[in-house]
Length: 370
Ligand SMILES: [Zn+2]
Ligand SMILES: [Zn+2]
Image (tube, rainbow, N blue to C red; front, side):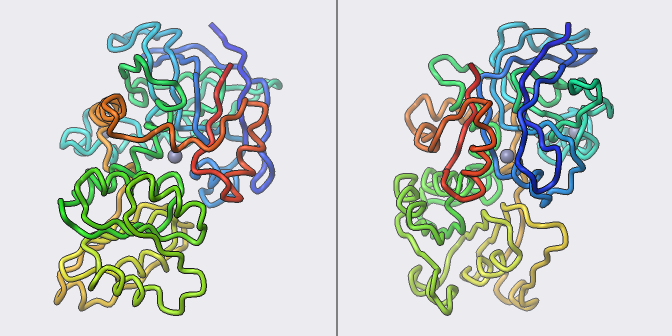
């Protein structure tokens, strides 16, 4: 059937998002339709609005969603009506070399589903009947969404609020996974995390959970640094006014970090993170930079200091394994989710939610559907 749904759309680059009622076609073969319970407002959504991600509008935003399956298409056996599911902004085809070697976050199909379902079509139309692109195969900042099963993960969410479930599907996975899956932070190590926003806080909590002895949160916003302490930062550093950030952080860490994470999106900052490493250390780029951005390292430090510079997309997620794992940690009281949510919004308040994100007022804002 067709579903009428309010949806958050970017109609024009660098203009405020709009809320429109759209039509969402029910599932075709290999697809499911989801009634959304909650959707996080993620920095990547903002990047699609402000042009950092060059997505031609109009685009239905949202990729950090949780909801309930209301209809399944032909050939779908792994999902049933009533299942609680999370969206995955990476598509998992299950058969490419990355999916079959345990790295579905690099699935070849994802690149083909940046603005559509993996087959290149969409189920979304505006009131004039014109097709609407969907963010990263998802477009879940809407009351209903039809997704390919390769972008959907079933979870046991009993006792977990929908807004907490939603956060797991992007921000928490990306940050926590960068520390746990990508860097594999070792007990007793020294970590520096640049950026204490929604993703950075989760990198901090991933480092702390991995047994890091020292976790330094770096941010220009003192309020965020205070929150970082509750997520496991042992030290904080505000670089505002510092004429040599690297020197200051090397001094604070007693010679440098074993792991340094960039959770903002600048080549200049990952270069600082890399410079803060001690010998044998690993720097991980987590933030998404503008397309032309580059970075520079001193070549011989790769050789003589055996430093590693790498990246982490989606926290090295294996969503079907990691989403349930994260919810399990939350249920056991070991992973913080509620504390990430600064503010809840109705879908009609979405423009305010994007304003608040752009101005840095939120750790995480979440749209909760009625
Ligand atoms: Zn995201
Ligand atoms: Zn694949």
